[in-house]
Length: 88
Image (tube, rainbow, N blue to C red; front, side):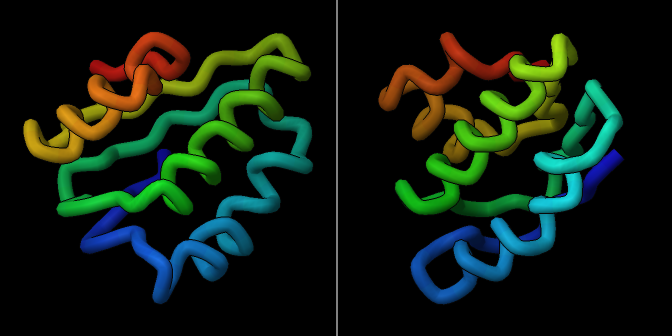
């Protein structure tokens, strides 16, 4: 389980991608992310979520984002990412 806190934006999106890179390259096929503390994501953050989803798909696994703030969920809905990524 990965826990996210705060904003994912241009100032830290590269750091976020580096921190989740082991999840993209590892053997673990399923990824469970608790988004309760995430208050915002920019398009760069969305890109990282998409890369994570693609890596999970390639391994035949499943990625789930949980406890998403309604305002952040709206960004996923508007961009169509909620059709690609499982959000509970």
